Amino acid sequence: MNIFVGNLPFTTTESDLRKLFAEYGEVESAAIINDRDSGRSRGFGFVELASDARANDAIRDLDGTTIDDRTIKVNQAKPRS
Image (cartoon, rainbow, N blue to C red; front, side, top):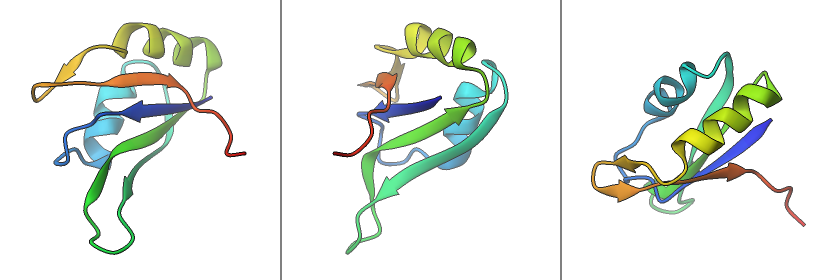
């Protein structure tokens, strides 16, 4: 399952995302989305977990938690339309 993680501190790295979600199983991918022009983080990213059940656990447990004084939003990623 692909998970959207929003309102991240701009200093968050892909490695940080992997560590955050690792306790929920195998992290297949983790990506921080960067601004095309400046290369700076846009404050959100995506994590893909192998197990849908564990991904739902991660969404439930991590949504609304705080990283570096920012309350993150965690939910199932919706396909672009």
